[in-house]
Length: 70
Length: 215
Image 1 (cartoon, chains in turn red, brown):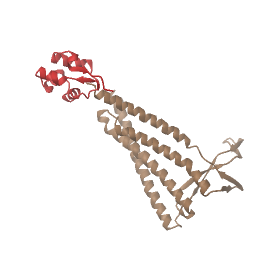
Image 2 (cartoon, chains in turn red, purple; image 1 turned 135 degrees about the vertical axis):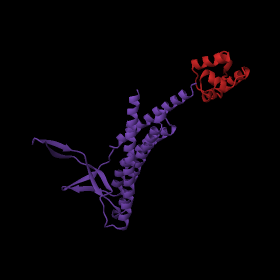
Image 3 (spheres, chains in turn cyan, blue; image 1 turned 90 degrees about the vertical axis):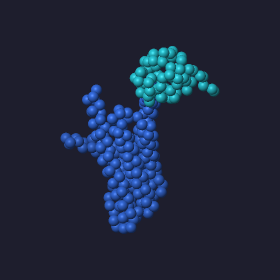
Image 4 (cartoon, rainbow over the protein chains, first blue to last red; image 1 turned 30 degrees about the vertical axis):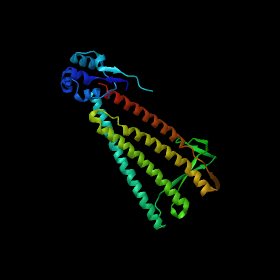
């Protein structure tokens, strides 16, 4: 998948656990784990907004793009 | 919305129970037919009314159609079937007929049983409102393949009998040839429709996966 998530890096920078983030953004740990592991197929803007608000970051800080090797 | 969900659940439950009964009936028919065959094998005098074979005839005769009000009209009879019992005393064709009969019954049982499994998985998923299971895609495809196989058998069987055993059929003082029957070709059309349904189901499963993995 060309879109990569750097959620664990941002969580480490903000000294926040996944559990704490899930409580603050009101998304289950299971869903956040799917996002963190890169298995998510899509993310809603409302979810992205909630995560960026709680982690005090921009979308580009938690999402990255790497073209697939052909 | 809730009342519609409840109605759908009741319909699914109803269809599931009809299929459960059908599975039982067809399964019982399979067992009974095998028992009867072996009874006939060891006792040729035992001749129950099965397995009856339908053979299409090449017929082109004038006939008369009489209506309820007494009016009569000339008609042309251009299609007819004969049915008769062929058991093992008829030699190889009798054995072949039994195998054909059992194959058709096994395919029918397989189709009903697979449908039952599909509805069972849908019924079990009602609580989570999620009928899309990956296994059901292959079950639907298998039903289509079974129908195709059954159609092939029903087309090929009269051909085999015609070249292996039968000459003509004589009745009413006239001789009639066996006709090759392609009516079951329509089953191929139904099998294709079922394959399309399987594809739609597969797309539904993909959409469901996308929805589940959308955070």
